[in-house]
Length: 389
Ligand code: PLP
Image 1 (cartoon, rainbow, N blue to C red):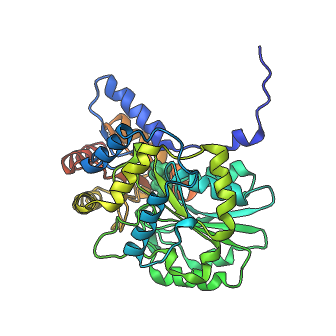
Image 2 (cartoon, rainbow, N blue to C red):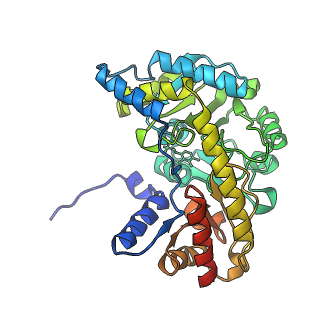
């Protein structure tokens, strides 16, 4: 019999339901059920071959040791060149920190500012790890309610009106998980202008889906606002753009004052990112981008198909899902809660989706469909859902 005394923060940690739904879907599949998985948020494509080969070559060439904690200099130079090419923004490679995936950047940003008494704002519905790590840190999570009528974009005035003297950090995410929402430039302009009155507030912009926009939309990177660069963290990474979720490769641009503390967090946490994965990441940035464009074109084709099919379901409506690879239909008129719908779709239709409430309380009435699956499977899944509805 033990009497272990866990730290209080551990019981405040949340989780990402996508992993639990995936486990349940896999269990049902193992029992012989035909399950279509529209739950997990990862591209269904292989990592492009030249990237895989670069990782293999790095191992064969003997890159088996530690690298600098902030990432290989050649890789950070390539990230800076890529940011300049994509966003037209000049970034000093010394401000780039390579980390194992997108998540460490958000964890470290929250650890840097979060403690009891502090407030941190985050999108809701939003990526569930934001709220989880804010709670873990002891800070008070202050939701930015995202509304369907705004295309799930944040409203700058609402964000600014929620700032208090205890606000330390605001997290924004566009294109967004789970809604596919893209925030228009006017709202970002207003937010940045309003922040001038609140010099004590830092901003983290999660731009991990920055290359996945549709219908001619262009990504607006916060890196293009020099007036806030001294308190801006921009999170990005390889997972989604290059179908590299399992390689664990991410980076962020940090302002000068945070570079030293975040480097120390890296040294305390993981020392450095896997060396061969960094060489693969380098090949991804410096090699041909055709595979990225092809993947985005396929996502766009599936997006049109799923949005149309969802809108055709009884009592279901869906916005046009402007970015990322998620559709977030409103199912409130079906009379089901999000969780009831998630369970019904999995148990009776054999379709894995994620309840909107897994992304925060403002997700009630919605379901997340990831369209990282073939068009055939997507249409088959919606047909099965039609049958159970
Ligand atoms: N940010 C957002 C908005 C995401 O949706 C995800 C993954 O789903 C991440 C960050 C984390 O990405 P990674 O798998 O690279 O940690």
